[in-house]
Length: 155
Ligand SMILES: [Zn+2]
Image (cartoon, rainbow, N blue to C red; front, side, top):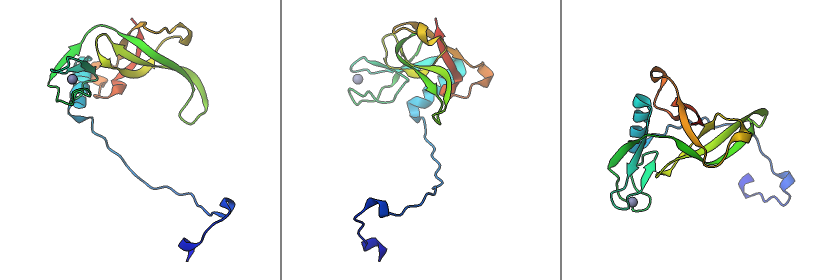
């Protein structure tokens, strides 16, 4: 009975490699879908505001993480965002060397949360707090995904 065998040396453990075909589908959720629709249709970011604590969150979400109540008030955001944090990546997904890509957490004035996306700028010229705006795909090409944002660039 192999299952009752006890292995005293880890080098004697047997293994094999294989794969399990799995497919996942995630929904954006109610507020996430509204956010994506606004981005697709009008190229703007949608925020949701809590009626109790008055905090406003981007991307829009359904519940306030502080008060745990439903947020029904939404508003679209105008104006530039700013670089809250960033890093430059020199490798692709498989770990191979690639051209440097700067990834930044973009926050919007007065909003909690933010958007993590590519930043089109020379890495040495990126500074914390620099104003940036989104570069969007053309209206007809947008699908309601975050990839509708090509990148952010200095404002
Ligand atoms: Zn709240």
